[in-house]
Structure formats: C-alpha cells, structure tokens
Length: 347
Image 1: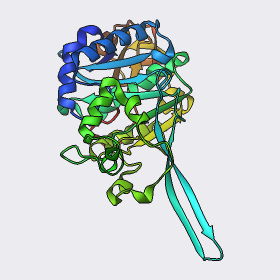
Image 2: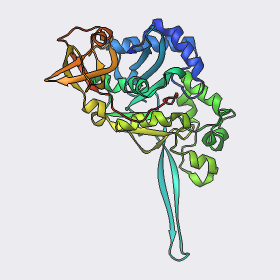
Image 3: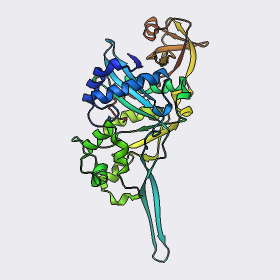
Image 4: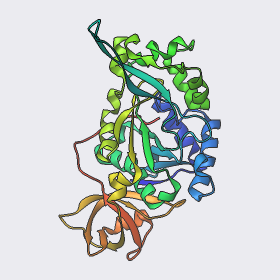
C-alpha cells in the first residue's frame, strides 16, 4: 500500500469513491466539476504555489494494483476566505436565593473561534480496506507530512467528526434545530455544504445563544458525539492527541477535536533517519515512512528497525518509496492499538 499526493488524473477514481461514500463526506462530493477544481488546487498546493488560506492537500491510497482505494486530506488554514462556523458549548446559570432556584443550562454559541486552524478532512476507505493499520496509514499520513512541512500549516489542527444520523440519513440535531430555518432535510443540507454552500447556510442560522433544553432529547444526546461508524476513526485521532474541547458541528452536532500541531504524536515523535536496506528482524515494528518529498511525496507503512540513526527496511519497502540506501527519510512508529474499521467521518 502506498500513499501519494492526489493528481488531476485521479478524477475518475475519486468520483467512484465519492459515489460510494454517500452523505457525511462533504469535502469529497460526487461532482466532476467541483472535484476537478479541487484537484487543480491540490496540485498547486503540493507544489507550494498557493497561499495557506487557499491551500488544500489531498492524499490517495493505492493498493498493490495501483488502484485508488482511499483518501485523506487537510485544509491549510480553514475559514480565511469564508467564515468557519462552529457551536461552542457553554453554560448559562440562573440563580435566586429568595426563590431558592438554581439552574444550569447548557448553551450553544455560534462562533468563529477555530478560524485559521488546519482542518483534517476527506478521510475515506473502500470497505474491504478498513483494517486497523491501513486506516492508520491513510489517516496519520497527514501528520507526518505536516511534520516535514510545518511552515505550511497552522499551529492548531482540528477535525470535524461525522455526527449521529440514522440509516435514512436523518440527523436528530438537524431535525431539532437547523430544519426550522431551512425547508430541507439533513441529507440535502449536507450535500449543499459539499458543493460549497456551507458558509451561506451557516449565516442563515440564528446568531443568538441557544439553550440546549429547547432541543429534543435525541438532539441533546447527539451533541459532541460521533456517528457509530466513526467511532474507530475517532480512536485513531485520539491516539495522536486530538481531543474534544466543547466545539461541535453546526449541522449534525458532531464533535470537533483539536490539538496544537507540535503536540500531535506523529509530529513530535517523528525523526529524520538514514534509510538502510536490510533485514528488519523479528523485533521490527510498524513504522510510517515518508520520502520527505512534497509534490512527489510517497508514504508507506512497513516493518522497520531503528539502529544508530538509521531506519532498516526491506528492499521492497525502499522500492515503494522510490529511494536508495543512504538517503534520509522521516519516520515515526505507526503505533499499536485494537483493530479499527474506518468509515467516512471527516468532512
């Protein structure tokens, strides 16, 4: 398995993936025109020719037959061209000694607090490839790339997790809140955000604080939660140190996780090592390995062993990276964990 930068020539393969993803993956819409525009911007972003405010990075995962079977990506600096909205969970207290009343009410505030953050997005894997290490490879690739090119990214990284919805695509949070301001169901609103209308829709939402007690019980229960299909993916980003700090998606109430870039595990623990071709041995561990390229980046996961400033890998691993012995790579342990199956969960 190989991760590389997406190209315009991947359009048809990505359209096929987008059609299977369905609702929830708003940054990979099944629109040839919109995907083509995105891929053109992606190519320029990897070349380093785009301002951070406009930069968009998309990686593709190739199987052994060079077929594209997965994606992941990130926006260099979210909300710098159009507002990036979130709800921040707060608390309103009403108290009266005379009436012997004391009430705490969870309250939703519409904010732009996360503007400028690097936003993870577009994580998706074909069903047959949703095993733990493959999922970690395509997800954590982004952190290793950011470690190598930190100047191109924000000091804070966020990810909007897919919120709860039922088998029919109905979101209890949307049904209890957003639907009152738009004559459309959640699936339609979700599609429009993927087509670039998120800011417009967000601006039609109420600006004043909302008391959570006015929402339905199902909507309140969905606040800060993730879709059941996304729970394994949640574990992967939590492994890296991202955590929920009270921000939620304005459409489905899904949790937004965040962390300083320098405190993300794959960033802080990654090292530049000299590639050595040999036998990793029985003590080899799964490593994430980056050839340190930008527009020609190639990233793999492979058994490897560190020894005196070198990273020992098998010959076929070096060939997949397109590298020879003695050249520098950036690497980090992939990490261990329980098997995880990943569904589309990052918008």
